[in-house]
Amino acid sequence: MKQSLQLKLGQQLTMTPQLQQAIKLLQLSTMDLQQEIQQALDSNPMLEMADDDNDSEERAPRTGDDSSSDGPMDSLERSATDQDSGDDGWDSQMPDDLPVDTQWEDLLPSASAPSYSGEDLSDSGFDSRNAASDSLREQLMWQLNLTRLSDVDRVIAMAIIDATDENGRVIQDLEEIRESLALEMDLEIELDEMVAVLHRLQQFEPTGVCTRDLKECLLVQLQQLPPSTPWLEQARLVLSRHINQLGSGDFSQILRRTRLKESELKEVLALIQSLDPNPGQTVGENSTEYVVPDVFVSKKEGRWVVELNPDIAPKLRINSNYAGLIKRADSSADNTYLRDNLQEARWFLKSLHSRNETLMKVATRIVEHQRNFLEYGTEAMKPLVLHEIAELVEMHESTISRVTTQKYMHTPRGVFELKYFFSSHVSTTAGGECSSTAIRALIRKLVGAENPRKPLSDNKIAQLLEAEGVQVARRTIAKYRESLMIPPSNERKRLV
Image (cartoon, rainbow, N blue to C red; front, side, top):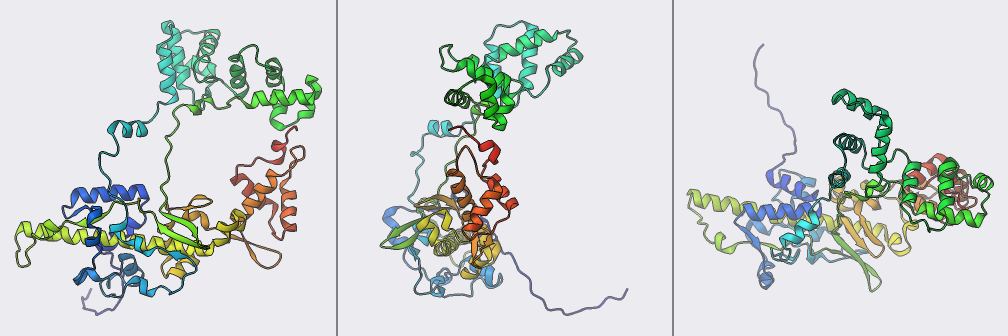
Protein backbone atom coordinates (compact mmCIF):
# COMPACT_ATOMS: atom_id res chain seq x y z
CA MET A 1 0.00 0.00 0.00
CA LYS A 2 1.41 3.37 -1.01
CA GLN A 3 1.61 6.05 1.66
CA SER A 4 0.76 9.65 0.86
CA LEU A 5 0.03 12.95 2.57
CA GLN A 6 -3.32 14.68 2.24
CA LEU A 7 -4.53 18.10 3.38
CA LYS A 8 -8.06 18.07 4.75
CA LEU A 9 -10.24 20.84 6.18
CA GLY A 10 -12.93 20.14 8.77
CA GLN A 11 -14.72 21.41 11.85
CA GLN A 12 -15.12 19.66 15.15
CA LEU A 13 -16.36 20.55 18.62
CA THR A 14 -13.55 20.59 21.18
CA MET A 15 -14.59 19.97 24.77
CA THR A 16 -12.13 21.97 26.83
CA PRO A 17 -11.89 21.39 30.58
CA GLN A 18 -13.63 24.71 31.19
CA LEU A 19 -16.49 23.70 28.91
CA GLN A 20 -16.82 20.29 30.52
CA GLN A 21 -16.98 21.90 33.96
CA ALA A 22 -19.69 24.32 32.83
CA ILE A 23 -21.82 21.48 31.44
CA LYS A 24 -21.33 19.47 34.62
CA LEU A 25 -22.42 22.33 36.88
CA LEU A 26 -25.40 23.11 34.67
CA GLN A 27 -26.96 19.68 35.01
CA LEU A 28 -26.39 19.36 38.77
CA SER A 29 -29.29 19.69 41.18
CA THR A 30 -29.17 22.18 44.03
CA MET A 31 -27.93 19.62 46.57
CA ASP A 32 -25.32 18.23 44.19
CA LEU A 33 -24.17 21.76 43.35
CA GLN A 34 -23.57 22.53 47.02
CA GLN A 35 -21.49 19.37 47.34
CA GLU A 36 -19.51 20.28 44.22
CA ILE A 37 -18.84 23.77 45.61
CA GLN A 38 -17.71 22.35 48.94
CA GLN A 39 -15.38 19.96 47.13
CA ALA A 40 -13.92 22.87 45.17
CA LEU A 41 -13.38 24.82 48.39
CA ASP A 42 -11.60 21.87 49.96
CA SER A 43 -9.33 21.20 46.98
CA ASN A 44 -8.53 24.72 45.75
CA PRO A 45 -6.80 27.13 48.19
CA MET A 46 -7.61 30.07 45.91
CA LEU A 47 -11.34 29.77 46.64
CA GLU A 48 -12.84 30.94 49.89
CA MET A 49 -16.13 31.97 51.39
CA ALA A 50 -16.92 35.66 50.94
CA ASP A 51 -18.05 37.72 53.90
CA ASP A 52 -20.93 40.14 53.61
CA ASP A 53 -18.59 43.00 54.49
CA ASN A 54 -16.58 42.40 51.36
CA ASP A 55 -19.46 42.29 48.90
CA SER A 56 -18.61 45.71 47.54
CA GLU A 57 -15.09 44.59 46.74
CA GLU A 58 -16.38 41.37 45.19
CA ARG A 59 -18.73 43.24 42.87
CA ALA A 60 -16.04 45.61 41.59
CA PRO A 61 -15.42 45.16 37.84
CA ARG A 62 -12.40 43.11 36.91
CA THR A 63 -9.99 43.90 34.10
CA GLY A 64 -7.93 41.77 31.83
CA ASP A 65 -8.93 38.30 30.66
CA ASP A 66 -11.56 37.98 33.38
CA SER A 67 -13.63 40.91 32.09
CA SER A 68 -15.18 38.78 29.38
CA SER A 69 -18.70 37.91 30.45
CA ASP A 70 -19.34 35.25 27.86
CA GLY A 71 -20.08 32.14 29.87
CA PRO A 72 -18.85 28.68 28.92
CA MET A 73 -22.37 27.61 27.93
CA ASP A 74 -22.59 30.52 25.46
CA SER A 75 -19.26 29.39 24.05
CA LEU A 76 -20.66 25.89 23.61
CA GLU A 77 -23.62 27.18 21.67
CA ARG A 78 -21.47 29.27 19.28
CA SER A 79 -18.06 27.63 19.02
CA ALA A 80 -16.05 25.61 21.49
CA THR A 81 -12.80 26.95 20.05
CA ASP A 82 -13.77 30.61 20.54
CA GLN A 83 -14.42 30.81 24.27
CA ASP A 84 -12.64 34.11 24.92
CA SER A 85 -13.63 35.97 21.76
CA GLY A 86 -16.74 37.77 23.05
CA ASP A 87 -16.18 40.92 25.14
CA ASP A 88 -19.76 42.16 25.06
CA GLY A 89 -21.87 41.30 28.10
CA TRP A 90 -24.53 38.67 27.73
CA ASP A 91 -27.14 41.15 28.92
CA SER A 92 -26.48 43.36 25.90
CA GLN A 93 -27.93 40.64 23.66
CA MET A 94 -31.24 40.53 25.56
CA PRO A 95 -34.22 42.67 24.44
CA ASP A 96 -34.69 45.96 26.24
CA ASP A 97 -38.28 45.30 27.31
CA LEU A 98 -39.05 41.87 28.65
CA PRO A 99 -42.68 40.87 29.40
CA VAL A 100 -41.46 39.32 32.63
CA ASP A 101 -39.20 41.16 35.05
CA THR A 102 -35.94 39.51 35.99
CA GLN A 103 -33.54 40.27 38.82
CA TRP A 104 -30.30 39.96 36.87
CA GLU A 105 -28.10 41.19 39.71
CA ASP A 106 -28.67 37.85 41.38
CA LEU A 107 -26.70 36.10 38.65
CA LEU A 108 -23.30 36.94 40.11
CA PRO A 109 -21.79 34.10 42.15
CA SER A 110 -20.83 36.66 44.79
CA ALA A 111 -24.53 37.28 45.43
CA SER A 112 -25.56 33.67 45.43
CA ALA A 113 -26.15 32.99 49.09
CA PRO A 114 -25.15 33.79 52.64
CA SER A 115 -22.14 31.89 53.86
CA TYR A 116 -22.72 28.68 55.71
CA SER A 117 -20.92 27.87 58.93
CA GLY A 118 -20.28 24.44 60.24
CA GLU A 119 -21.86 25.39 63.56
CA ASP A 120 -25.31 25.90 62.05
CA LEU A 121 -26.03 22.18 62.00
CA SER A 122 -25.05 19.99 64.89
CA ASP A 123 -23.70 16.56 64.15
CA SER A 124 -26.44 14.89 66.14
CA GLY A 125 -29.16 16.74 64.25
CA PHE A 126 -27.58 15.88 60.92
CA ASP A 127 -27.29 12.22 61.83
CA SER A 128 -30.87 12.05 63.05
CA ARG A 129 -32.19 13.58 59.85
CA ASN A 130 -30.16 11.36 57.56
CA ALA A 131 -30.18 8.09 59.50
CA ALA A 132 -32.04 5.36 57.67
CA SER A 133 -34.88 3.81 59.60
CA ASP A 134 -34.92 0.07 60.28
CA SER A 135 -36.41 -2.21 57.68
CA LEU A 136 -39.48 -4.33 58.31
CA ARG A 137 -37.36 -7.47 58.65
CA GLU A 138 -35.17 -5.84 61.29
CA GLN A 139 -38.25 -4.74 63.21
CA LEU A 140 -39.74 -8.23 63.10
CA MET A 141 -36.45 -9.88 64.10
CA TRP A 142 -36.11 -7.45 67.01
CA GLN A 143 -39.58 -8.42 68.25
CA LEU A 144 -38.79 -12.09 67.67
CA ASN A 145 -35.75 -11.86 69.93
CA LEU A 146 -38.00 -10.57 72.69
CA THR A 147 -40.43 -13.48 72.28
CA ARG A 148 -40.05 -16.76 74.14
CA LEU A 149 -40.16 -19.61 71.61
CA SER A 150 -38.66 -23.02 71.29
CA ASP A 151 -35.67 -23.52 69.03
CA VAL A 152 -37.75 -25.17 66.31
CA ASP A 153 -40.45 -22.49 66.46
CA ARG A 154 -37.78 -19.79 66.26
CA VAL A 155 -36.37 -21.38 63.10
CA ILE A 156 -39.88 -21.49 61.62
CA ALA A 157 -40.48 -17.86 62.57
CA MET A 158 -37.22 -16.74 60.96
CA ALA A 159 -38.13 -18.59 57.75
CA ILE A 160 -41.56 -16.93 57.66
CA ILE A 161 -40.02 -13.50 58.27
CA ASP A 162 -37.58 -14.09 55.42
CA ALA A 163 -40.55 -14.88 53.17
CA THR A 164 -42.33 -11.61 54.09
CA ASP A 165 -42.09 -8.71 51.62
CA GLU A 166 -41.89 -5.00 52.40
CA ASN A 167 -45.70 -4.75 52.43
CA GLY A 168 -45.93 -7.25 55.30
CA ARG A 169 -47.30 -10.04 53.13
CA VAL A 170 -45.98 -13.63 53.23
CA ILE A 171 -45.24 -14.28 49.56
CA GLN A 172 -44.34 -17.96 49.95
CA ASP A 173 -46.75 -20.77 50.75
CA LEU A 174 -46.39 -22.35 54.19
CA GLU A 175 -46.11 -25.80 52.64
CA GLU A 176 -43.14 -24.63 50.55
CA ILE A 177 -41.48 -23.15 53.63
CA ARG A 178 -42.03 -26.40 55.51
CA GLU A 179 -40.51 -28.45 52.69
CA SER A 180 -37.48 -26.14 52.44
CA LEU A 181 -36.85 -26.44 56.20
CA ALA A 182 -37.14 -30.23 56.00
CA LEU A 183 -34.68 -30.29 53.12
CA GLU A 184 -32.11 -27.81 54.41
CA MET A 185 -32.23 -28.42 58.17
CA ASP A 186 -33.66 -31.95 58.28
CA LEU A 187 -36.59 -30.88 60.45
CA GLU A 188 -39.84 -32.80 60.55
CA ILE A 189 -42.43 -30.07 61.07
CA GLU A 190 -46.18 -30.40 60.93
CA LEU A 191 -48.19 -27.85 58.99
CA ASP A 192 -50.27 -27.08 62.10
CA GLU A 193 -47.10 -26.01 63.88
CA MET A 194 -46.26 -23.71 60.98
CA VAL A 195 -49.72 -22.12 61.21
CA ALA A 196 -49.37 -21.66 64.97
CA VAL A 197 -46.06 -19.82 64.58
CA LEU A 198 -47.59 -17.72 61.81
CA HIS A 199 -50.43 -16.66 64.10
CA ARG A 200 -47.87 -15.75 66.73
CA LEU A 201 -46.03 -13.53 64.26
CA GLN A 202 -49.28 -11.89 63.27
CA GLN A 203 -49.40 -10.39 66.76
CA PHE A 204 -46.26 -8.37 66.02
CA GLU A 205 -46.23 -4.69 65.17
CA PRO A 206 -47.26 -3.16 62.85
CA THR A 207 -50.64 -4.85 63.08
CA GLY A 208 -51.40 -6.97 60.04
CA VAL A 209 -47.90 -8.16 59.13
CA CYS A 210 -47.05 -11.76 58.20
CA THR A 211 -50.44 -12.32 56.58
CA ARG A 212 -50.98 -14.34 53.45
CA ASP A 213 -53.52 -12.22 51.61
CA LEU A 214 -55.50 -9.00 51.88
CA LYS A 215 -58.48 -10.60 53.61
CA GLU A 216 -56.35 -12.13 56.34
CA CYS A 217 -54.45 -8.83 56.75
CA LEU A 218 -57.63 -6.84 57.34
CA LEU A 219 -59.18 -9.50 59.59
CA VAL A 220 -56.07 -9.55 61.78
CA GLN A 221 -56.31 -5.80 62.16
CA LEU A 222 -59.98 -6.07 63.11
CA GLN A 223 -59.06 -8.70 65.67
CA GLN A 224 -56.71 -6.23 67.37
CA LEU A 225 -59.50 -3.67 67.83
CA PRO A 226 -61.41 -3.46 71.12
CA PRO A 227 -64.53 -5.64 71.22
CA SER A 228 -66.65 -2.56 71.86
CA THR A 229 -65.73 -1.04 68.48
CA PRO A 230 -68.94 -0.15 66.60
CA TRP A 231 -69.78 -2.32 63.57
CA LEU A 232 -66.89 -4.69 64.29
CA GLU A 233 -68.82 -7.92 63.73
CA GLN A 234 -70.46 -6.61 60.57
CA ALA A 235 -67.04 -5.63 59.20
CA ARG A 236 -65.74 -9.14 59.88
CA LEU A 237 -68.74 -10.59 58.07
CA VAL A 238 -68.25 -8.41 55.00
CA LEU A 239 -64.52 -9.14 54.81
CA SER A 240 -64.76 -12.88 55.40
CA ARG A 241 -67.64 -13.57 53.00
CA HIS A 242 -68.02 -10.68 50.57
CA ILE A 243 -64.55 -9.26 49.96
CA ASN A 244 -64.78 -9.99 46.23
CA GLN A 245 -68.00 -8.00 45.91
CA LEU A 246 -66.43 -5.28 48.01
CA GLY A 247 -63.48 -5.02 45.65
CA SER A 248 -65.70 -4.84 42.56
CA GLY A 249 -68.03 -2.28 44.12
CA ASP A 250 -71.09 -4.53 44.00
CA PHE A 251 -72.73 -2.97 47.05
CA SER A 252 -76.24 -3.98 46.08
CA GLN A 253 -75.33 -7.66 46.40
CA ILE A 254 -73.63 -7.03 49.75
CA LEU A 255 -76.76 -5.26 51.01
CA ARG A 256 -78.93 -8.15 49.89
CA ARG A 257 -76.77 -10.89 51.39
CA THR A 258 -75.90 -9.21 54.67
CA ARG A 259 -79.36 -7.67 55.09
CA LEU A 260 -77.79 -4.43 56.17
CA LYS A 261 -79.29 -1.05 55.51
CA GLU A 262 -77.49 1.37 53.27
CA SER A 263 -76.62 3.69 56.17
CA GLU A 264 -75.31 0.71 58.17
CA LEU A 265 -73.18 -0.54 55.30
CA LYS A 266 -71.74 2.94 54.97
CA GLU A 267 -70.55 2.79 58.60
CA VAL A 268 -69.08 -0.68 58.04
CA LEU A 269 -67.19 0.50 54.97
CA ALA A 270 -65.82 3.47 56.92
CA LEU A 271 -64.39 1.08 59.50
CA ILE A 272 -62.86 -1.15 56.81
CA GLN A 273 -61.34 1.84 55.01
CA SER A 274 -59.62 2.89 58.23
CA LEU A 275 -57.50 -0.29 58.06
CA ASP A 276 -54.10 -0.45 56.36
CA PRO A 277 -53.88 -2.91 53.43
CA ASN A 278 -50.05 -2.68 53.40
CA PRO A 279 -48.93 -2.33 57.03
CA GLY A 280 -45.31 -3.10 56.23
CA GLN A 281 -44.91 0.14 54.32
CA THR A 282 -45.18 2.13 57.55
CA VAL A 283 -41.82 0.66 58.61
CA GLY A 284 -38.57 1.66 57.01
CA GLU A 285 -40.08 4.48 55.01
CA ASN A 286 -37.60 6.59 53.11
CA SER A 287 -36.74 9.87 54.76
CA THR A 288 -38.42 12.91 53.30
CA GLU A 289 -36.30 14.77 50.79
CA TYR A 290 -37.10 18.46 50.80
CA VAL A 291 -36.94 20.31 47.51
CA VAL A 292 -34.95 23.54 47.43
CA PRO A 293 -36.28 25.82 44.65
CA ASP A 294 -33.73 27.30 42.29
CA VAL A 295 -35.85 30.30 41.29
CA PHE A 296 -38.71 32.22 42.89
CA VAL A 297 -41.63 33.61 40.90
CA SER A 298 -43.87 36.25 42.45
CA LYS A 299 -46.22 38.94 41.26
CA LYS A 300 -45.13 42.49 42.07
CA GLU A 301 -47.04 45.54 40.90
CA GLY A 302 -48.95 43.52 38.32
CA ARG A 303 -45.88 41.88 36.77
CA TRP A 304 -44.45 38.42 37.30
CA VAL A 305 -40.91 38.70 38.67
CA VAL A 306 -38.32 35.90 38.40
CA GLU A 307 -35.58 35.87 41.02
CA LEU A 308 -32.73 33.46 41.61
CA ASN A 309 -32.81 31.73 44.97
CA PRO A 310 -29.95 33.30 46.97
CA ASP A 311 -29.58 30.16 49.10
CA ILE A 312 -28.67 27.64 46.40
CA ALA A 313 -24.92 28.26 46.63
CA PRO A 314 -22.53 29.89 49.10
CA LYS A 315 -20.83 33.15 48.22
CA LEU A 316 -17.36 32.53 46.80
CA ARG A 317 -14.40 34.70 46.00
CA ILE A 318 -10.73 34.38 45.15
CA ASN A 319 -8.38 34.56 48.12
CA SER A 320 -6.54 37.85 47.60
CA ASN A 321 -3.69 36.87 49.94
CA TYR A 322 -2.79 33.74 47.97
CA ALA A 323 -3.36 35.51 44.65
CA GLY A 324 -0.90 38.24 45.71
CA LEU A 325 1.83 35.65 46.19
CA ILE A 326 1.92 34.80 42.48
CA LYS A 327 4.95 36.22 40.70
CA ARG A 328 4.69 36.88 36.98
CA ALA A 329 8.13 35.63 35.88
CA ASP A 330 8.60 32.93 38.49
CA SER A 331 8.43 29.36 37.15
CA SER A 332 9.02 27.54 40.41
CA ALA A 333 6.81 24.64 41.47
CA ASP A 334 5.05 26.65 44.19
CA ASN A 335 4.34 29.57 41.88
CA THR A 336 3.07 27.23 39.15
CA TYR A 337 0.81 25.51 41.69
CA LEU A 338 -0.68 28.84 42.77
CA ARG A 339 -1.09 30.04 39.19
CA ASP A 340 -2.86 26.84 38.10
CA ASN A 341 -5.22 26.96 41.07
CA LEU A 342 -5.98 30.61 40.38
CA GLN A 343 -6.95 29.77 36.82
CA GLU A 344 -9.13 26.89 37.99
CA ALA A 345 -10.81 29.14 40.55
CA ARG A 346 -11.59 31.71 37.87
CA TRP A 347 -13.02 29.02 35.62
CA PHE A 348 -15.15 27.69 38.46
CA LEU A 349 -16.59 31.12 39.31
CA LYS A 350 -17.21 31.77 35.63
CA SER A 351 -19.01 28.42 35.28
CA LEU A 352 -21.22 29.25 38.26
CA HIS A 353 -22.05 32.59 36.67
CA SER A 354 -22.89 30.84 33.40
CA ARG A 355 -25.13 28.33 35.20
CA ASN A 356 -27.07 31.08 36.94
CA GLU A 357 -27.35 33.06 33.73
CA THR A 358 -28.70 30.12 31.72
CA LEU A 359 -31.10 29.14 34.50
CA MET A 360 -32.51 32.66 34.69
CA LYS A 361 -32.90 32.91 30.92
CA VAL A 362 -34.83 29.64 30.71
CA ALA A 363 -36.96 30.31 33.79
CA THR A 364 -37.88 33.77 32.50
CA ARG A 365 -39.03 32.42 29.16
CA ILE A 366 -41.02 29.65 30.83
CA VAL A 367 -42.83 32.14 33.08
CA GLU A 368 -43.48 34.38 30.09
CA HIS A 369 -45.02 31.47 28.18
CA GLN A 370 -47.00 29.99 31.10
CA ARG A 371 -48.34 33.23 32.55
CA ASN A 372 -51.91 31.89 32.28
CA PHE A 373 -50.97 28.96 34.49
CA LEU A 374 -49.74 31.32 37.20
CA GLU A 375 -52.89 33.40 36.89
CA TYR A 376 -55.62 30.76 36.54
CA GLY A 377 -54.19 27.34 37.43
CA THR A 378 -53.32 24.05 35.78
CA GLU A 379 -56.30 24.10 33.43
CA ALA A 380 -54.79 27.13 31.70
CA MET A 381 -51.44 25.44 31.04
CA LYS A 382 -50.23 25.94 27.46
CA PRO A 383 -48.41 23.28 25.41
CA LEU A 384 -44.66 23.79 25.39
CA VAL A 385 -41.69 21.84 24.07
CA LEU A 386 -37.96 22.22 24.60
CA HIS A 387 -37.44 23.42 21.04
CA GLU A 388 -39.53 26.56 21.61
CA ILE A 389 -37.51 27.66 24.64
CA ALA A 390 -34.27 26.74 22.86
CA GLU A 391 -35.11 29.10 20.02
CA LEU A 392 -36.05 31.93 22.37
CA VAL A 393 -32.79 31.76 24.37
CA GLU A 394 -30.70 30.77 21.30
CA MET A 395 -29.37 27.56 22.79
CA HIS A 396 -29.50 23.88 21.90
CA GLU A 397 -32.31 21.63 23.12
CA SER A 398 -29.82 19.49 25.02
CA THR A 399 -28.80 22.55 27.04
CA ILE A 400 -32.45 23.31 27.84
CA SER A 401 -32.93 19.70 28.88
CA ARG A 402 -29.98 19.91 31.27
CA VAL A 403 -31.09 23.17 32.83
CA THR A 404 -34.69 21.98 33.39
CA THR A 405 -33.77 18.64 34.97
CA GLN A 406 -33.87 18.59 38.78
CA LYS A 407 -34.32 22.37 38.86
CA TYR A 408 -37.36 23.67 40.72
CA MET A 409 -39.43 26.84 40.56
CA HIS A 410 -41.31 28.25 43.54
CA THR A 411 -44.58 29.84 42.42
CA PRO A 412 -47.70 31.04 44.27
CA ARG A 413 -49.31 27.77 43.14
CA GLY A 414 -46.58 25.54 44.56
CA VAL A 415 -43.10 24.23 43.81
CA PHE A 416 -42.71 22.60 40.40
CA GLU A 417 -39.84 21.09 38.48
CA LEU A 418 -39.07 23.07 35.35
CA LYS A 419 -39.86 19.94 33.34
CA TYR A 420 -43.45 20.21 34.60
CA PHE A 421 -44.12 23.21 32.36
CA PHE A 422 -43.32 21.21 29.20
CA SER A 423 -46.09 19.05 27.76
CA SER A 424 -47.42 17.82 24.45
CA HIS A 425 -50.53 19.25 22.83
CA VAL A 426 -53.91 18.03 21.66
CA SER A 427 -55.90 19.74 18.91
CA THR A 428 -59.17 21.46 19.74
CA THR A 429 -62.33 21.74 17.65
CA ALA A 430 -61.63 25.45 17.17
CA GLY A 431 -58.30 24.67 15.51
CA GLY A 432 -56.17 25.55 18.52
CA GLU A 433 -54.04 23.46 20.85
CA CYS A 434 -54.56 22.26 24.42
CA SER A 435 -51.82 21.07 26.76
CA SER A 436 -51.91 17.49 27.98
CA THR A 437 -51.31 18.83 31.50
CA ALA A 438 -54.46 20.94 31.19
CA ILE A 439 -56.40 17.90 29.97
CA ARG A 440 -55.27 15.93 33.02
CA ALA A 441 -56.48 18.77 35.22
CA LEU A 442 -59.85 18.73 33.47
CA ILE A 443 -60.13 14.97 33.97
CA ARG A 444 -59.34 15.32 37.66
CA LYS A 445 -61.93 18.12 37.93
CA LEU A 446 -64.64 16.05 36.22
CA VAL A 447 -63.95 12.99 38.35
CA GLY A 448 -63.94 15.10 41.50
CA ALA A 449 -67.39 16.48 40.68
CA GLU A 450 -68.98 13.21 39.54
CA ASN A 451 -71.84 11.40 41.23
CA PRO A 452 -70.34 8.60 43.38
CA ARG A 453 -73.37 6.43 42.61
CA LYS A 454 -72.80 6.79 38.87
CA PRO A 455 -69.11 7.58 38.21
CA LEU A 456 -68.08 8.81 34.79
CA SER A 457 -66.71 6.27 32.35
CA ASP A 458 -63.76 7.05 30.09
CA ASN A 459 -66.11 7.35 27.12
CA LYS A 460 -68.33 9.80 29.00
CA ILE A 461 -65.31 11.91 30.02
CA ALA A 462 -64.22 12.03 26.36
CA GLN A 463 -67.70 13.25 25.40
CA LEU A 464 -67.66 15.95 28.07
CA LEU A 465 -64.24 17.16 26.94
CA GLU A 466 -65.39 17.19 23.33
CA ALA A 467 -68.32 19.38 24.39
CA GLU A 468 -65.75 21.84 25.75
CA GLY A 469 -63.85 21.79 22.47
CA VAL A 470 -61.11 19.27 23.31
CA GLN A 471 -60.96 16.18 21.11
CA VAL A 472 -59.44 13.29 23.04
CA ALA A 473 -59.81 9.58 22.32
CA ARG A 474 -61.12 7.23 24.98
CA ARG A 475 -57.82 5.37 25.13
CA THR A 476 -56.02 8.67 25.73
CA ILE A 477 -58.43 9.42 28.57
CA ALA A 478 -57.67 6.02 30.09
CA LYS A 479 -53.92 6.68 29.82
CA TYR A 480 -54.20 10.10 31.46
CA ARG A 481 -56.50 8.72 34.15
CA GLU A 482 -54.03 5.97 35.02
CA SER A 483 -51.19 8.52 35.20
CA LEU A 484 -53.29 10.46 37.72
CA MET A 485 -53.75 7.27 39.80
CA ILE A 486 -57.53 7.45 39.30
CA PRO A 487 -59.19 4.00 39.33
CA PRO A 488 -61.73 3.03 36.66
CA SER A 489 -65.39 3.88 37.05
CA ASN A 490 -66.43 0.51 38.50
CA GLU A 491 -63.91 0.93 41.32
CA ARG A 492 -64.93 4.53 42.02
CA LYS A 493 -68.53 3.62 42.70
CA ARG A 494 -69.42 4.54 46.27
CA LEU A 495 -72.42 4.68 48.57
CA VAL A 496 -73.74 8.07 49.63
